[in-house]
Image (cartoon, rainbow, N blue to C red):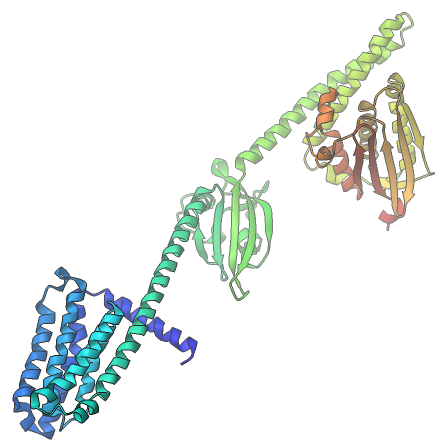
Length: 554
């Protein structure tokens, strides 16, 4: 017998045993005793046709009577009130009627001693002290064949030895049944442990999924719902049409964020996930009106142990409040920025007019220059905030042919007064014309941010160098300063919005943390990029790379 066959047999035995043990003690006792009584009845029927005289033999009658009495005991004794092992007295007593029946009917029907297999199976299959029950089975089998010989005075050595075969066979059966029973019980315990662990893990998983503030939907390979946690159920109800209760997925109110047109079947998140699409934080709106919810949905398929597609998991995060807060913030920033720009423009205009008044003293002119410089700085901060708050404007940048060298020179000329006021040498090293395609104001904003940053974070008497050159298909502009530099741990977030390095904060130099972030975003929209290298106490180099115009045309 192979290992798989043994395992299959054990599985069957375990299942049968589970059903059998689910019965009450009285029914189990009757069912365990009934096979022997049915077989003895069959023996009586056979003898009726073969040798009716045997049926009237005292030993045969007494043996059948004892067997029936034992069956009656199984049915009337309250076994549940007795120790579990007490019922094993019945199979031990079963050897008594067999010992009486063998001598009388053995001459007519051979092999009656093998009926001892019934009490042997009961004893050894009980699982109670296997060694003891096997030993009792062996002893009872031996007495079953020897006692009649002793009673008839025929207990000669050769006759005793000749009858040893049946007890030996019954002992072999007892050992086999005991081994199978113990193996089955051990497997049953393992199965019960695994089931208990599985149930515990399932309950833990259900608790976790119902606790997290993320909707989780599990679909099988056919797109049918397998699991939906509490949060997902709430989101589902938000997408149900008013007045409806349970509707098909195709009838749910699902929209793209910002649209009032319901999505078609193939565009819906569930349909896309079932089709095998992978989604990552895509935003949708569920329902309509004030009760609608904005959700961010991600979807991934999962596979079974064989590597076959088994289904899909969707995770839905409710971002309604987050989206509303972001929009409110952006609206506020845009409105405030516009409100600030008007008086600042007026202030700068009057300050520049006053500087040309010949009647002003040198000290007054100096004060006006300070006022103008700070007003320009404040206007730049307002412009940065406004640019960061306007959504969707940057991707529509117009593209025209520009000379990056000329734009850099113009930016340097605009920053020259500030550089002179701080005694910082601002120089431009250009390598001829560098044609690019882009938006003039956007590129100028990048350059203004880089140059103003270099000047802000440089000490008096240092220098800022603007270097332009070609590198393959790229137009490259490097802005190098001799300022106090950027710490290594701050380099990873220097292009993150509203983030400023510790050194910049300690310097007291005002700023919003938006300029470099916006500069990098615009550079990437133009097909380029912005990089930085820096060393504390030495300075920083910001490098702008934009594709040469010839690489974008055609």
